[in-house]
Image 1 (cartoon, one colour):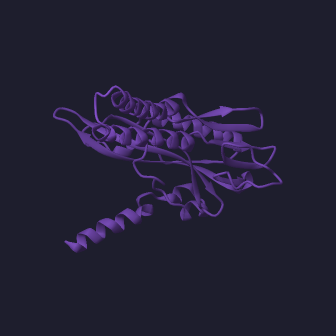
Image 2: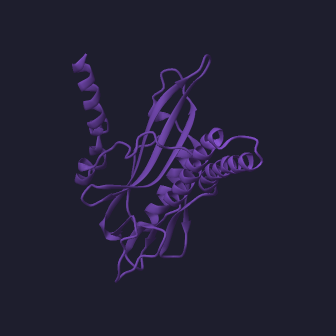
Image 3: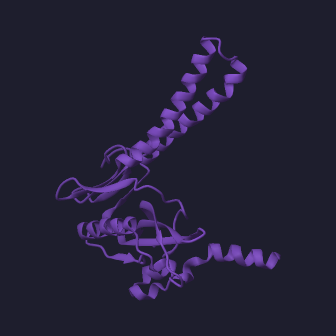
Length: 240
């Protein structure tokens, strides 16, 4: 039993062999990881690629992403309002309403946290020669500690499209749930995620998961091609 558990854990951390990177004929590809940076963490299409000029591309949060965060905040505000309304009108005691206040604060805090996290824009600026992620402009001669990261564009080696899926079965139908990632691969084979989305579709008997094509995956592919043309870098595409 312990041996089986060890083999399972070993497989989780040694998935590079599941894809033959030699197809790209690139030594950096052979050193690059080919699994998701954050496994099965895809969902709504939360980011979109926007051209901000001839020499600048941005990846911004979509309206769906902002609405997702707003739902958490609204639920929290409702629960907090319920707490104070019931308390001041004498409908409930402070002790019995305390759970509503606690949950409301948690939901509101989570919504604000996710909004700040997802609202950070990813900038690719050819004039500055850098790409960075944050909610402020890159200061070429100053302090950029508030940015999540920043790197020179010339250090980008390639773009990488990877996916991971699992089957979901019902009584009469079988579906597949797939998470897609678009990553930047640096010259030292490090990866930075720039977009993530989840998709799903029907799967036929005997069909491989990685051969299932979804609308969400195709849209992310379109973004990868557009960014590839802008940066003049190849796309390492492993997605169906």
